[in-house]
Image 1: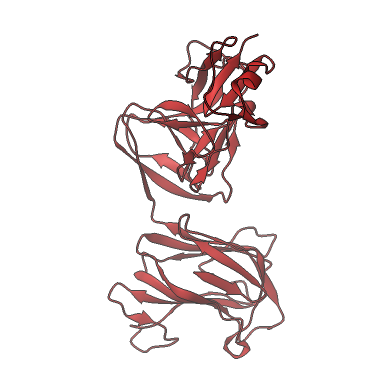
Image 2 (image 1 turned 90 degrees about the horizontal axis):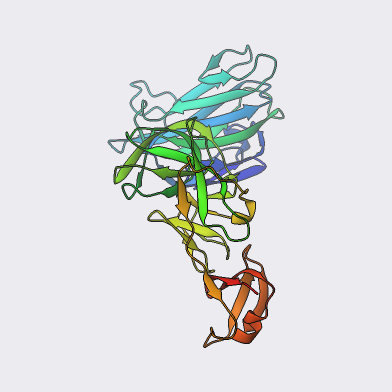
Length: 349
C-alpha cells in the first residue's frame, strides 16, 4: 500500500511491516484536498498491534484520523456518530500542547510519537489514514520522520535441532524458546586456508538488524519482538545480514543445516538470514570456543589433475581472476586459494 503525505511519499513493506518515509507534510484539512492520506488498498492488520509515527517540529494544532474496518467488517468513517458505533479514530495535539496519544519525545523540542493501539481498538483493516488541520494554520508543517506498523510481538523461525543457522530480523528480540543459544563470529584460524570459524556466545540483547548465528534444540524457535526497528541489516565481523532473499556473492559462505558451503554465484540467501564474507573475518583461535568447520579444499598438484571443461577462476574474496581458464592455466596460477566451479582450489607450488 502507498501513503502520500503532501509533498512526500513512501511505501509500506509487507515483509517488515515498515513504512519508509521522510518528508514534510503540509497540514491541510478536507478543503485542501491533496493533504488527505489515502491507502491504495485496504491494509490487513489482524496480526498488527501498533501504528507508530515519529513526528518532528509539530508547531500547531493537529489531529490524526484513521478510518478502518472492525472484525465484523463494519466501516468506521464517521466523524461524530451519536452512537459511536461507526466513528473513526481521532487523536489530537492542541495549541496548548495538550496531547491525546501524541507522546512528547523531548520537552525542549516539538517532537512527538503518535502511537495507535490497533488491536485494542478492534481494527481489522485500515481504510484511510490522514492528518486534519482545518482549524489551524494551513501553512504550518511538520516532518513525518518515521512511520511503521508494528506486529503484535510474535515471530518464529523453523530450525533443525542441534544445527547452526543465521538469523537477522529488523526488530529487537527476546528469545522465548528454552535451550536456544546465539553466537557472534569471533574469527577464523587462518586467512590463507581457514579450516575453522570460531564463535562467541552472545549473552546480551538481540539487537534490531544485527545478524546472529543460532543453535537450539527445538524445530521451531519463538521470539518476542520489541519496538526498536532497523531499516538496514548490519554487518558484524563478516557476518552479513539480509532481510530479503538474494544471491550470495561468489566466494562468500552460507550456513545451512549446520554446515558452511561456498557460494557459487547461484547460491540463495534466505530472507531474514545472512552469509559470511571471510575477507572481513579476523584471524582468531581459542580452542575453548565453539567452531564450525569450513569445507575441505580441493588441491591441485602438478599436471596430474585436470578440468575437462574450461572454467572461470575467482579469488577467495569473489573477484574474478580469469575467464574460461584451462587446467593448464589454473595450474600455473600463483600459490594461493581460488574458487573454481564452486570449489576451493589450493595451488601449492
